[in-house]
Structures are given as C-alpha cells and as structure tokens.
Amino acid sequence: MKGNSAVQTKPRTLKVDLLARVEGEGALQVKVKGDTVTDVKFRIFEPPRLFEAFLRGRAYGEAPDITARICGICPVAYQMSAVHAIENAFGVKVDGAIRTLRRLLYCGEWIESHVLHAYMLHTPGFLGYPDAIQLARDYPDAVKRGLALKKVGNDIVNLLGGREIHPINVRVGGFYRVPTRREFEPLLERLKWARDAAMETTEWVGTLPFPSFEYDYEFVALHHPDEYPLCEGRLVSNKGLDIAIADYEQIFHEEHVAHSNALHSTMRQGGKYFVGPLARYNLNYEQLSPLAKQAAKAGGLGAFCANPFKSIIVRMVETVYACDHAIQIIENYQQPREAAVAVQPRAGTGYGCSEAPRGILYHRYRLDNTGTIQDARIVPPTSQNQKIIEDDLRRFVQSHLELNDADLTLQCEQVIRNYDPCISCATHFLKLDRERL
Amino acid sequence: MDDTETRLVIGIGNPDRGDDGAGIAAARLLAAAAIPGVRVMEHSGEAAGLIELWQTTPACVVYMIDALVSGAPSGTIKRFAAHLQPLPAGLSGGSTHLLGIAQAVELARVLECLPSQLIVFGIEGACFDFQSSLSETVAAAVQRVAAQVQSEVLEPEAAQ
Image 1: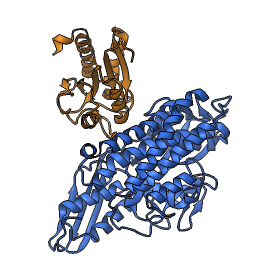
Image 2: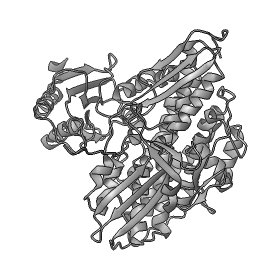
Image 3: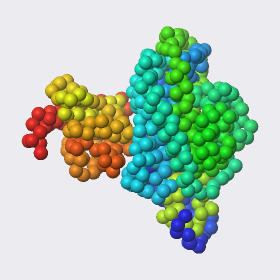
Image 4: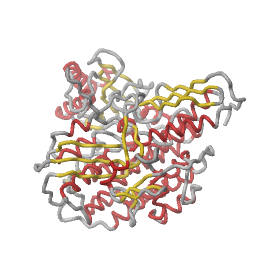
C-alpha cells in the first residue's frame, strides 16, 4: 500500500458521507486518538421500509410478491425464504422437480449478484480504480466478460421467475408455470460458456492484491449433508452451533442502535457472527462440486479461508458452482406434471431460512386458519453482518494507522465491500413504540 | 428486431414504485400507438441487459424514457443526446439498484457498444413509494413525452 508514514499523534476522523459501490445508502465514520481507534460507526441511513408491517393482514399467497420488493438484487432469496416459511407453517413438502427448479432459480440470482459485485463493485477498488467505468478502459475484455456472465444469471431468473427483477412466477407450493425442456435448451449452451467464464474470473480475481487480514470469526451458514446449501438445512457455525431453522430466535437477537436504521444482530450467548459466501464456503466446502473445488484451488484458496478480502474469490467459486449446478439441473430436467403442489392453509407459525447471495435470510410468519398473515419477522444477512463489519473496520484501522487518511479511508471502504452489503434489505424492519397521549 | 424496425423505444423503471414507473407508462402509450417501424419495450434498467440490448441493435436509433431525480419541479422533462455526452447521475434516481442507466451508458461508451443515436428523456419524479401510483404532474409529463417521442420518430429531421 502507498502513503506509508509514521503513526500520527493528533486525533483523526475518517469519514465517508455516502459509500460508493455498495447497494443503498450508507456511511462510515472512524475516530482515532493517538494510536487507538476510539469509535467506529457503519451508518445506514436509508429510510426503513416497514415490510414487516405491510405483510400483516395479507394473504399468504402475497408474501413472495411483497417480500421480493424488499430488494432488486436478491428478490429470489426473499421469495424462497418466504415460501419455505409458509410451507413449514402449513405442513407442505415440496420435492422432486419443483424443489430442483427452485435451486435453479437461486443459481441464477447467485450468478447475477456475485458477478455484479465482483466486476462492478469490488475489483475496481483492489486495482486502484474509482469505478467500473475506469476499470473498463483498461480491462475492456474482462468487463465485457463480466457483463455477459451476469446476463446469463439474469436470463435464468427471467425464464424461470418470469421477470429478471422482482420475479412473478414464484408461489407457495412451487411456481405458476414451469418451462418445457425445450425452453431451457438455449440457456444450456450459454451456461457452458458461463461456467468457463466464471472459472477464468476466479483465476483473475485470485491474483488481486489482498491485505493480510485474518481473524477467528464465528461463521454461520446453512448446512445440508447432500448439497451446497441454498434453501434448506440446519444452521451451523464453526464454533459448535447446530440448530434447526425454527430455533433461530432462541439463539439470535436483534437490537436497535442509534446510528443505524438497520437492526444489529448478535448471538444471545456469543456475540458477533459472520454470514455470507465465506461462511457458506468454510462450512460446506465438501458439498461443492469437483469443478468448483478446482476453481477454488485455481483462485488460491484451500478448504478454509478467514480473510474477508478474499470473499471475492469465494463469490466467483460459488458462481462456478452455480453454473455447474444449473447445467446439471437442466441436463436432467423432466418437466413436472404440475407447477405446484396443493396447499391447504392452517393456523400456525412457520420458519424459513435460505442462503441469499450475502448470507442467511431468515423469515418467520404467524398465520391464522385462513392463511392470513398475523405478523412476520424478516432478518436479512446485511443486518446480521453490521457488527462484524464495524469490528473489521476497528481492527483494520488499528493495524494500518501508518497510512494517510485518504488511503486508509479507501481501504475502509473495501473492508465494507468485502461483505457486499445490501443496505436496502437491511432497513426493512418494523419496530414501533406507540406512546398513548 | 426485424429489418423494418429502425427505431427502438425503451421505457425504463419499476411500475410498483410510484413515479419510477414513468418510463414504463410512456412506453405503454407508445406501444398502444403501434407506430410502423418502431419497437417498444419495457425494461428494468438493469445495466447488463441494457448493454446487451444495445449491442444487438447497433444500427437503430434508440429512445429511452426514465424517471429522474435532479431537484427540479416534479414533472419537468429533460432530453439528452446520450450518444454525444454523459447523462446526469439522477436517472433511475428513485431506485437503489446499482449501475443506473447513466453508468450503463458510460460503460457502453467505453466498451464501444453504444447505439449510434441514443436519445434519453428524463421525467422528474416526486414520489417513489412502494405501490403508489404516478404523481399527477408526472402522469401529465408522461403524456407529453410520449407525444414528443412519437413526433421525433415520425419526423426525425425536425428533431435534429
């Protein structure tokens, strides 16, 4: 890193009023006195969206469509968590081809989200470019590859979801319509190209200059014995956590902090934890396809990685996996007779958790006997990562005080981008204190 | 596009978010007009998809209509010749999505896949709330923009 100098003794404040290349509106403030970091704030000031309130009184069938609008980048994640939670409440089991199509839809979202992040948001900062447009001047072929790769992800979501942003084809029990085998054929050839492009990208990002920055994190992710997790599994960590999704609220707790519009999450008997691609990778490496493991090796990764800067490599390994898995699904596809299983509403509470591109996304719904939503709880991954982001900022600044303010601020922005935060998602919550006058 | 279609109109936006649906509303008016030689599309504004669309219509004149957030009074209409100069950052202003169309245009310019003529109409929005309808001033502006695009498409020399 450039700009090395002796540690400054006068108080320093690093401030970014509006973070660039993150989704949504957030800011950063770090205060340093002498050689000690005294305060760190990752501020989210995007207005709360109150989706948990919108859902009250709505029919269960509306939940996938309403929650999809929490985010334009990861709508499938919201739909999958929603349908799984409601199906859990109703005792509905979705299996076979419909279950597999859901995984295919999720693969599309992972591809488009991870590729957008890797090419447009994260890589420019590693190479000293202010934005993707400047990166494209010097790396036009790479950026064109990234755009074409992202488009393949968009097209999966478009074909199976009915629309590339806020898909309209997902419902409790399955889909409104499923494609024919023939409709998938044009996508198959493009996915084979995409798989190669994702491998090339993994090798490319593996050469980026990564700071040495490792920590003993508690990684939390879904874990499934038979597959890399998308929609199902148990919640596990590298420090002994192993619970059913239904027990999420026994372990994880949300609190409001003054400097953020998004609730912060902690573990009731632990503290901060880390969700997202690095957590998934570390807790599910054995479930990756052989080609994805090959990609990881080509990108310079072993079976475990504790450097959040290298999350960009993991995102591309997951993109290789998603392309590979999508090809396997389409090659073996047999169109199901029905697009959805029968659903009979009943009163109860249901729990769902799926692996959004940024990490675990938890939904809980309480419904009455007509299937009307009485209340809802939604915890997105970026909310859950806020505390660990602030922790990383504190540790990074503490160990890089010799940098001048400009360089240190740029690096702090990269620290935040390691988590690919989705600020719009994080501010969906409802917390209403009513004062009777 | 078929060989007879030499003009492409793209309405950009999210019809579920109030004035962010302005571009979509304008596109629907133009689609209903069924102007010969003109293809009308609705698009989310997602950059990779837009750039691919421009790559497949290089010989075409492209019109795009989108909401704008620039601080001007609601319903203000601005016209940009994006093939000649950068767009303001406030386009797709009601969305928190990354890479709005301004960035998509600049990326396409650097990658040399911008349409030879790209005319962008921005309609200043006021309210982008979930499930709200178009503001009155924006709805009126949508009508005017649709009429202007129709006029330019039918008499391109007058628009120069």
